[in-house]
Image 1: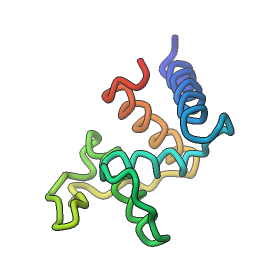
Image 2: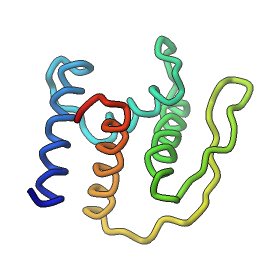
Image 3: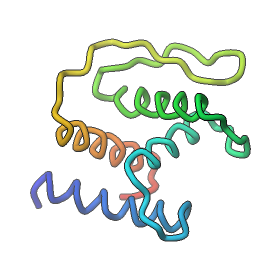
Image 4: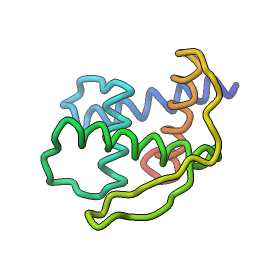
Length: 118
């Protein structure tokens, strides 16, 4: 199976599984999955988040997802338990489709690491 076909298969499985668990079966979009990763990384599951906090959660997720690629590095947790990352390398200029593939690849890798999918 080609790398692209395997990524698509794993992505579809992940979207289906997360959608059943968190969205009553309605397919979750990429941004919603990134948001879920942010909540997972923060570990504060019962809190209601304001708009700016939701954006910060997505930022945490993106940093964590791209950390294995060498773009970000974990720095510290602040007094409220929020993780902070530093930029190790600037992201290359990517077209929208390339960004989407990179994020899907990173998300699939994350959920493989967490053994949510295999």
